[in-house]
Length: 174
Image (cartoon, rainbow, N blue to C red):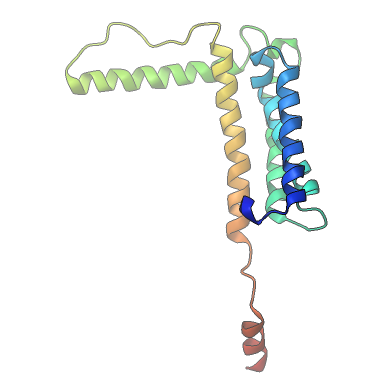
């Protein structure tokens, strides 16, 4: 849907939704809490639901419903992976393992690039220890957001094509 096709009231409802998101961001004074996958993916899922209620009220949009189900699944997967307790925000949480995997991939890529260029790397790539949790959170956020986006794309692609009245008459006449 293009924004120029929305009515004025639908645009106002979208601006209210954007204001609610800004209030959510303002309430969290630490980016560590805001970047946590459970918080981000829950907010995205709630936003999809509010968008469906506020803009598409009275219609049954399968794409939005599939995206909300994928969002709920992503939230549950994030809870199962990292938990919700204080240890999921502390140093040594499971999300740091994702950051360590990213460190290893980046380090190997840099070393391979150095070999191709004929140079030699003497240092190892590593994130700062205080940033490792944030990087792990971002990786989990991207995975969950990707799942939501893929669910929407697959639902849209597998939706049956709507038939025009002319095509319906031609098929019933034969």
